[in-house]
Image (cartoon, rainbow, N blue to C red; front, top):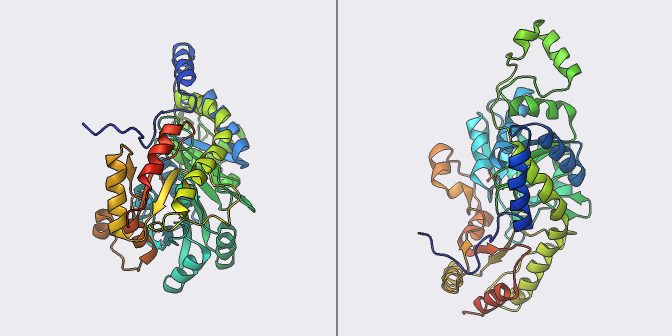
Length: 398
Ligand SMILES: Cc1ncc(COP(=O)(O)O)c(C=O)c1O
C-alpha cells in the first residue's frame, strides 16, 4: 500500500468534485450513446474557443495527442524517416518516445534551470551541433515556459517546424499570447492532476486545416468517416473509391484508434466551465509559497518574469545542492506531503533513452534540475492547513 499523505499531489479528480460526479452518473444513465459523437464535437469546439485556436482534435490521452501529431506530420510528408526532431530534455516519456518510434532521430535540447524550460539560447546552442534539425517539439514545463516568441522566430528563420507539448501549462500566458498558441500545433493532457481532468484525455490544437484533417484520419483507423462530406468525396475520388459500401471501410493513411468517448467529452465540457478561474488561483498558490522560498538561502527561486500568467502545474522547488534536495524531500514526506522529481528528471539519463537512443549531447541544465529539484501538488482547493504544512517544511536546513 502506498503511504497516504496529508497533502497528496492531487486531492480530487475534478474541479467541483461532488457536482461533477453526480452529473456524470446522470449523464451515463441518460446519454443516447457513449462512444465518440456529439459531446466530443461540442467539447472540441468549446476547447478551440477557450484556447483561441481554429481546430481541436480530442483523443484518449496526452500521450496519444503527441503520437498522432507526429504521425500526421509524417503522413503529410512534412517530416520524414530519419529527420532530426529536437525535444526539451526535461519532459515526459511519451513526448520523446513517439519521436523514436516513428523513425525520427530525437535530439535533446537542454533546459535553463532558472525556468526549467528550453529558451531560444539553448535551442541555438543545440542547432550548432544539429543544424539539420527539422522540428522542435518543446515541452512547456510545469506551467512555466521558455521565450516562446523568440523560439518561434528562430524556428521560422531556420525552416524548423515548431510544436508545443502544453500538457503541463494550460492557461499560462506570455505577453505575446497563450502557451500552446506559438507553434504549428500544441498538445494538452486531461489526466487527473492536470489543470482540468477528463480522467484520461488529451487534445491537439492547430490553425492548419490540412493538419487538422490528417489528425482526424490518424485518430481513428486511417478512414475518412470523421471528415466533412466534401472532403470525404475529394479523398474517395482521388483514390477511385466510388462505392459507398466500400468507402466506409477504406483506409487512407497509417493511423491508430485513440478515440475519446462521450463520457470523457461530457466531463471536458463541465471542467472547461471552471478551469479559467483556477489559472489565477494556481499562480496565487505558487506566489504564496514562493515568498518562503525567497527568504530561504537553501533554494534558488524560479524566474517567470517573462510571463504574464503562471498557471503553475505544481509547487516546484530547486535546491542549491543534491544533498539539500534529498533532505527537503525527506522532510516533506515526514510531514505528510507527497513529492516527486521535476517531471521525471533528465530524459537523457533515463534507462530507456540510454538503451534505445543513447546520444551524447551534454545536458547540464536538465541534470541540475534532475539532481536538485522536486515538487509537491498545487491545486485550487488547497487549504490553510496545507499551506501551514508547506511553510513548516520550508524552514532552512543548512
Ligand atoms: C509534458 C507531458 N507530455 C505528455 C504527457 C502525457 O499525458 P497523458 O498522461 O495524458 O498521456 C504528460 C503527462 O503528464 C506530460 O507531462
